[in-house]
Image (cartoon, rainbow, N blue to C red; front, side, top):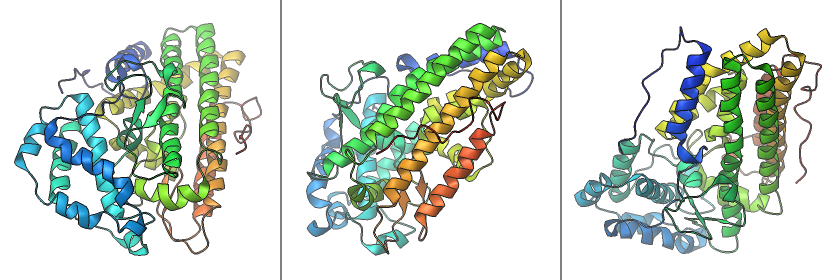
Amino acid sequence: MGTPRLAALPERGLTNSHVAARVRASYHLDLGAIGAFLPERVPVLDLPPIFAPYLSACEELPARYPRRHGGVRLWMDKEFRRDRAEVRSAIAGLDTGHSDALMTVLCALGHTYRWDSVPPVAERFDEHRVSLPPGIAGPWAVLAGMTGLPRVGSAWSLHLTNWRMTDRPGGAPYRTAELTRASLRVARNWLAPPVDADLESFSVAFVLMEASGGDVLRAVVDGIETAASGRVEETCAALQRLERAIAAVTLGFSSNVRIRTIDPAVWLELIQPTYAWGPQGGPSGMQLGTIQALDAVLGIGSRSALAQLARTARRHMPPAHRRFLKTLDLAGPALRGFVQKSRSDDLTEQFDTCVAALGRFRGTHKARGALYLRSRPPGDVARTSTGLTIGVHDEPLGTFERSMDERIAETRAGLFRANGRGRGPERGVHPA
């Protein structure tokens, strides 16, 4: 893979200018030309011929995965009964685009095998250990070791690299502004029509959030730089752009995750079980880099249960993205410190509007998640995922809302002035 790396930073004795310079360098090196938590090029769909059986199996999933068709375990046990040395060897020669593509394919096969059918039978929720077929487990372990990612599906592998564009091939360059609901399709879909459209809308919503996040990250990096050089007005301007960018992420989330695009009953019964692996395994909103970047740079507290889970969720991100977030962790205290020392009413108020905007995003997430969880059939004890993944057997709605309330309060505590424009993170929730 051979990606150049920045030298490790000490966490003490750094000047704000040094931290700002490192943030800028990490932004360019670790996020690349795309400047977002997305692949640098349109994900590729093809793989070398030796991986053809895996691509063919993915294409068969929609016909085999429904419970009424018997599930996939017996079929996959036969198809992938051998861990072939030549497959393992071929993995080492894959470039970044093809290794991402293979990871998406193996995650799709692994997660559908874990649940066997959709909707899953009740016994699947009590399984704590699943023995995958050797022909999936072996290559998946090799690929996970090579990429630095855990051997489980993640937001990166099942959402952020699992898409294609309608107007250009895999491997082509793109800009985040070109990613729209009209231009995006999910690459690997394991559900058959008509519910495949609901899964596509859900998965693409993650991609669109990180595409909008590109504007967030540009404003973040600019604000850290101007603060480090003591420029109050320029920092205020960067924070104004940041507030608008956060609002755009919130609007995009509420526009793409709604009843008209993703039916709650379909989501609960057919979509969300496959993404989960266990109580803390599988894709989740906590693995979205843009939200973690905002928490870091705004200095939001990290004692709540969700904050701690978000920190743990970083291991599901590509190593380069984890490095960028670690660098931002150092910059957050510097930005807050500059705002406080500036004694500028305008800068303080603008910082608070950014914190409040992040709170409103969390309020929208809470409202939308609660809407979907209320559609849960009585007596259903399935684990639930609303961008978080929560292992519950009772009170899923209450558990989710209490967790979100705790995180919203922790976000509100990041305000400098409790009675300013920043008050009221719950406002601005968009209806379904």
